[in-house]
Every structure is written in C-alpha cells, then in structure tokens.
Image (cartoon, rainbow, N blue to C red; front, side):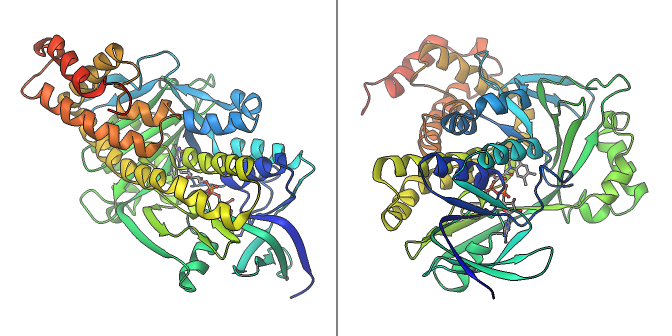
Length: 457
Ligand SMILES: Cc1cc2nc3c(=O)[nH]c(=O)nc-3n(C[C@H](O)[C@H](O)[C@H](O)COP(=O)(O)OP(=O)(O)OC[C@H]3O[C@@H](n4cnc5c(N)ncnc54)[C@H](O)[C@@H]3O)c2cc1C
C-alpha cells in the first residue's frame, strides 16, 4: 500500500451510471474522482459480447436532459416506433409501442453513449477520471477504497467522504457489504442466457431490415431480437435456455448452430453471413435479478444502478433506471445538501419501490416478448387499452407506455395502475376476437367508473 489520497466523492465505475453521476455531482459543486477498471473507452475499441446497443426511453432521456446532455446524445439515437415481429411461418407484422408520434424508444450504442458521458464528465473541472484502476477492497466505515493499477499491478488507497458504487451487476462494493453482513443480496438467475450476433449492412451500407423498429423472432420459450445501429447493421441477441431443447448446451458445433437457425429462424440465415463463426466465438452471458437490502452502509457507501439492482433486460430499462437513480440522488442533494448519512437512506427509501417494481415487470416482459406477443388476445387487449387511453389520456395509460414514455409516473405506480387496468382489460376482452365485438361504450363507462375519478379516489 502506498499514499492515501482524499477526495470528496469517489465513484467506483465509469460506466453508464458512474459517468452520468460524476457530472451531476460536479454540477452541484462536489469534487469527484471516478475509478474505472477498464481502459478509457474513448481510446479503446468497443468491448465484444456485452449488449452492444441498448434501448433508451423517456426515463433515461429525462435524466440526461436534467444533466443538460441531450444535445450531445441526440445525434446518437436510432428511433424505434414499435416491434416488428417475424413469425416462424415467415409472416411479419408491426405492433406500435405507443399511439402518439413521440412515443418511440431509441437504440443507442453503449460505447458511443459511454464515451459521450465520459467526455461531458471530463470537461467539468470538478471531475477526475482514472482508468485501468480496479477496486479490490472497500472499508465502508472509513470510506477507504483500495484499487489496483491494471498496468503496473500496484495497489493504492483513497479515502473519501462518500463512496458511490456504480460498479455494475458484479459489484465489488455489494460483495463487500454482503461479506461483512452489511446487506443481503438475493440472486435469482434465469435458466436462460444470451449471445450477441450481427446483421451487417448490405453492400450499399443500408439496413437489411426496417431500421425504425425493434425486430423480434418470438418462438415461445426463446427469442431472437435485433436493434438497429447507425452504420446500417443490426445487433441481434438470442435469448435461449441453457439446458433445454433447444438450448445453448446443444449448440457447441457449427453444424448444430446452422441446423438450429435453419429450422427456427430460416429468414435470418441470408441476413447473417458470419452467423456460425460469430456464434462459436462470442460469449454466452448470464441473466438475473439481484435483490439487495439495504443499498447503503455506514453513512458513507451507496450502491446505485446495476450495483444495487441488476435486472433482466426484457423491458430495456436497466440503464434507464440507473439514470433515474443518478438524477434522483442529484435532486436530493439539491433539496437537502450533501449530508450523506441522511441522504443515503433517503435515496434508498425513494428508489427502492421503483427498482423492485421494474425488476418484476422486466421478468414479466420476457414472457410477453417471446410468447404472449404472438397471441391475438394480446393485440386485442393492446388495441382496447389504446382506445381507452384515447378516451381518458390522463387516467388510463397502457402499462408499457407508462414504463417507457411517462417518467413522471414512477415504476412502482406504473406497476400498481397496470395491474388494476389489466383486470378490466381481461374482463372486457373475454371471449372476444376483435375490437368490433367489444361494446366500446360500455368499456369506456367501466373505465370511467374505475379510473377517471377525481385524484385521490
Ligand atoms: C443483454 C443486455 C441488454 C440490455 N439492454 C438494455 C436496454 O435496452 N435498455 C436499458 O436501459 N438497459 C439495458 N440493459 C441493462 C444495462 O446494461 C445496465 O442496466 C446498465 O449498464 C447499468 O449501468 P451501470 O453503470 O450501473 O453498470 P455498468 O454499465 O455495468 O457499468 C459498471 C462499470 O463499472 C466498472 N467496474 C466494474 N467493476 C469494477 C471495479 N472493481 N473497479 C472499478 N471499476 C469497475 C465496469 O468496467 C463498468 O464500466 C441491458 C443489459 C444486458 C445484459
């Protein structure tokens, strides 16, 4: 161990949450030091096999706007208006996400977004960024962190008023808290993993599929999805069980991979010329939810973003939720000052209900994306929900829309309202095949009785 440095706030991890939080804290006059394990992504090539692009929605945008970052981020966005479904029989159809033109989500490169956030943080005089520095040990009671220089192997220590752990799903800070009995973390792994693949641009550099949609090949117990990139390519992700038929354990050889895709996703073979070598070279990632309690220790250590609440990616909300965490911590500082022992529990009380709600809704959305989305009843309920939203735009908003397009409604509130709405939608669509069979006047009356009461009712 060498010298002990002191900084006001230490952020572990310069990923998506860490970089945004650094900027937000510096904007509030704090001195911030960010320690990131990787090399500076602005000077290094993009990492492989780690959700190359992501869906950014209104909650994430709201937080980025709060930091004044949207002018820098806007040019990186690829709008997606809905889900473009590719059925097993080759038929295709489009299901819009929302019903207003602005109700779209955006594909964005993780690498480009992280670089833009780091650029903005680095430009602020209150932020120091250190790359190639891996946190190896934390002493929560003293706010001391030991980190290893990845180039030289040397260990240094730094002490801070507060340590804000944005070190992602495999957080060292969370592990330290668990090991010392300072928190409990319940890990729930899915029996499914994921692998990333590429649909390259065509010879003219154009997208080979409609670029304004998230493409899904739903197949019941598994699915393939594709999000557009600005260079004409798509990043695809296959979500599949490990030990099932079909499953990853059966797909270890070229012939098996090709046979699987030919049988289950025949229309993708012509789109993915490098499918087999890519499949065999890329890692299979794990998917899970971690429920941690509490998120803070000793008035000096706080977990945020994936470090506090890793969730499965099926609602495309992990980053959006992490950005909301950053914004809400900044708002608490605005309201109460940087009194960490008071702020850390207040932050958890504010964010926990929402983190728990989106964790559950993300799990539910897996079933929707890979399965329910193919059910005509799903389309009917969605059409009726849109109909009721048109009649009562403030009171009846489809749950998906609340999560994706309404940052003013918390995840927890979206989950509560969504559950009540679903009971009504189930009832009104029972035994019906199409919207024409539903008595819309009665549906509106029922919705009005239940949802259009004065607030507080
Ligand atoms: C397949 C997949 C698809 C996804 N799609 C979406 C999507 O469409 N929309 C969405 O909103 N979310 C999505 N997510 C979730 C999203 O990736 C995460 O929620 C988001 O990255 C969380 O940000 P974070 O900053 O908390 O963690 P991360 O982005 O993981 O950043 C953590 C940082 O900490 C660094 N670090 C880790 N350990 C240490 C250490 N010991 N010392 C120093 N630094 C360290 C890492 O190098 C990294 O830079 C997806 C996730 C997966 C797996």
